[in-house]
Image 1: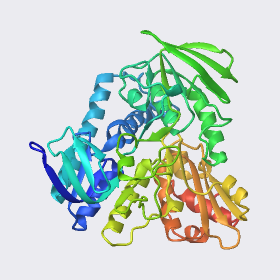
Image 2: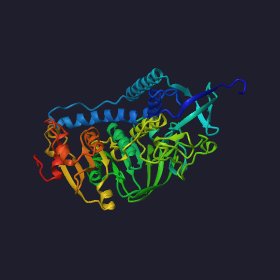
Image 3: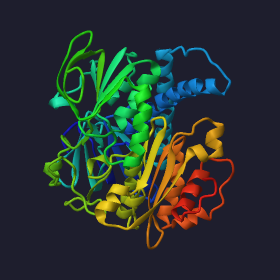
Image 4: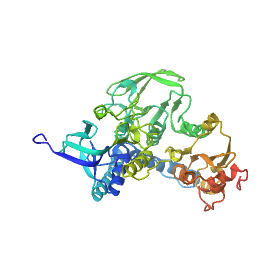
Length: 469
């Protein structure tokens, strides 16, 4: 050991403390393993807690309140125009984050997980160097890479803190409510944050290179969402790309190409939401002999094992949907495999949720995927306009759609657009986890009046026997 350096040993070294990392660390500790978790942040939580899921949903909830206040007018209650206190909004967001982060620290301590703030880099397949930390080196039996992902910048440029060209992290800092905002990208991040800024008062324009929003989501859900967003956003331009951007102290000059009226426009701010890339550079994966693909994702087998024995990877840094709950389940399964148990994730039953208004939620396969695979299927749909709870709340846009195997009736996919879709989808997720048929949902008694009755009615519709339609 070099004088002045502190070396330690650990059965399991977890690199990254986001939902995948801390879930892996907690489960491994619960199974009796000695665990060290390293992250550049002082407290666990990762991008999800500090710059992603939690702050965005905090602001989306507030945007929903504004939406509800406006909707109540047609029901007999009128509120005044909302007054926006940006500092109070930021303070509320900060208090939520602090509370959850402190809770994760407490859970780590109670489980005996050693938390180290620093930057981990593999020296070889059994040792990692820890920079900017009191512990300089850790020798491990097993390592779990849970380093997450980061936003893709426009044309390779890096995002500047406080700049007018923002990543999702910059947008969630909520420095101001820009009079005009351009969003580049029609995925869930762009749509969610566009919803927030539109509710707060920005005139939002969105451009998307493809011919539709939300690529990969069942096409039936995209059309009604697009129609609703047209009432919130100033413009939505599909098949349009950004040729160049130039920012100065007061705004951003943008040149567009495609299906857009004005090729040259100026905006107060621009949000780049064109996707994320795995955060795998600088980890010393080459020194450990760990293989990555041409996009930077760590290559793993069905047990999250890399090509190097004892080194595993999970979450956003491996191929698959970049979802916090997917990473969390992988973290738990990976820890169980390391401990000699049987860990498993059913990737056919991982829900995807877009927290716009109305919400969009899906699980399983889309109609397009079933058609491409040549699978014979049945469809059951039920609109919220025929649901008593939705009508009482004046939220009747949207529907529930179930896809079932034509021969076996097994549920192959479910897609919901409407109020509280992100909660409702989990009834079907549980059903799919246990191999449920549409008939199983149809014959399950649902409370009245609830939104979830629409799920039952969609299941009944698969067999052509809805009650309220």
